[in-house]
Image (spheres, rainbow, N blue to C red):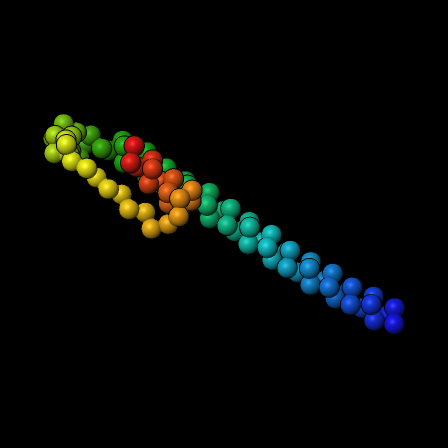
Length: 91
């Protein structure tokens, strides 16, 4: 009977190890994807800010939007990445 219990423990240990290894690999991929996304977003924002004055006159745009309300609708729950980016754009 003890051999059956040891065999069960060995299989369970291997299963747990496989699941944790998979979760670790997915976590690494997710971290790399998030870092890449942040780099792309902020790099594009910096490049756009550098070329912003070349594309349009800020005074004309400011006059156009004066007194108007702009609503940004985010289709994701608060506290996430989309919410964070929308709040930064809103400022």
